[in-house]
Image 1 (cartoon, helix red, strand yellow):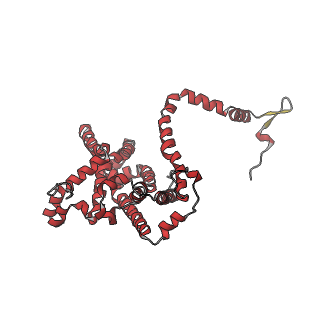
Image 2 (cartoon, rainbow, N blue to C red; image 1 turned 30 degrees about the vertical axis):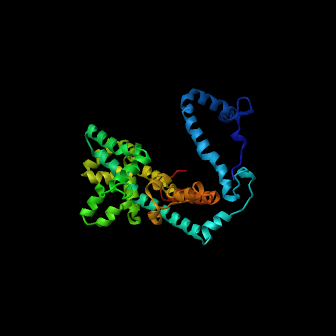
Image 3 (cartoon, rainbow, N blue to C red; image 1 turned 135 degrees about the vertical axis):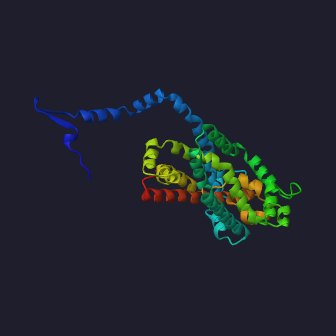
Length: 351
């Protein structure tokens, strides 16, 4: 246990024969006394930067924090007349029904939870490395014009709306209910003998066996280029002397990637991996809602669409809120676990 000494606050003046206040302690006391004044002066000095934070703070306030009030609906009997705070408390009955209810809704919830995890896990396994690979390829392109063109082409899908992206995917596989004939991808797969002609005509999006593959491939197409910006920025920050030292030692391009580039951006990869694990169970319902149908519920239905179907389209708002809350709690636990493992395994972590 640390103890304070008089020498920490006073020093002995031999000439005067008295104790005087320690100058360093006087500075610390002054800083503590005028802390808020220093903070105010700093804010006034860089007020433009702080003003730019206001829109972000408002977004978090209205779309992240205020909706937390509605989480009380997980524990209340819904009553449209009364506010959530005044509704009758029902305990954990919604959670019990979802987890151990034994009825059709409980089975659908477990199926949706399994599908959510599988879609996210496949996205982590196949989608997470793709931006890193793209960034490595961009770094090897010597022509600035060619590199900029390739980057813009890979960024474009990210700036399209989800409706446009899903419409393009649907046209490529030509879902039978939208138009006759087969799409380009369906024709290619049928020509190679990978799928039957009947399956191609029926529409790949009507077959539950193909939904996860279509979802993952379209997700990589949409987000790989945009996500590579972070890794490319980390790569171009590497000192050129590191490449020169590797070349002197006889390292080729692949060896430079392995022993210079990847170790240099490892901290960035770890941080992005932790954040990706945190959203492992948070799949937005928009894309799934636009791609799935009743024929593909077995592999396409996720927790978000389950909550949308029973909460917004149905009348079971408490069950829908409970499902989303469990999904988010599991995601929070995954973030804490991944961050703890990363902190113990290396010196890189979120906190």
